[in-house]
Length: 234
Image 1 (cartoon, rainbow, N blue to C red):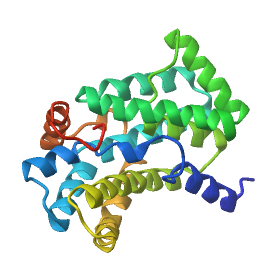
Image 2: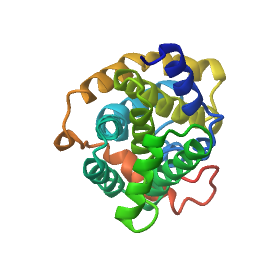
Image 3: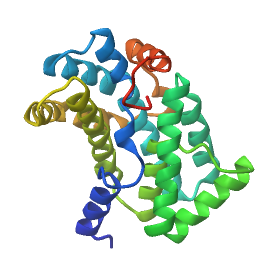
């Protein structure tokens, strides 16, 4: 039997800002949105991030995470490779691909070094062989794979990942707008129902359901590449 307390502690460690994936260096295009005047305060940040969660990477990443999780639990290398390829191909800009794959690669290395299981090692090796080199792991797929290999509950992993993503963007907004810490926490709390909904929907979604229309967020990530003064890598 799995240990629910151990599972919770594992999730807390993997999704903590202290886990070495470098999430604090990315803003998911928010830095440009702030520069352009689209996000200027707490309410506009909450609206922006809710749209990204529902219509953009939040929802899509939750679905991809669940499918990676299931492939890992079943030892389905072909299904996992398909999910890895699909997730990498979805990135709408160079910086968003960097954000997703740099964090994914860092997560895989960190888990392999400190928290690995034979199942996880086998899947990583199989993916490396298929890609004839390091697989283009995105963060969501890497977390889903590690969680599935470790036997963590997908119904707990999906909302935890989505909230960690939201928390990282909120943190970027707190620093770049800037906002107070209390305002950032209020925004994060207000998004809990959205996080729960997209995570719940992901459990019954197929890969054909991946997609969205967070166009302004995608454009922001493209514009950020040439932004004159930058604090973040995306």
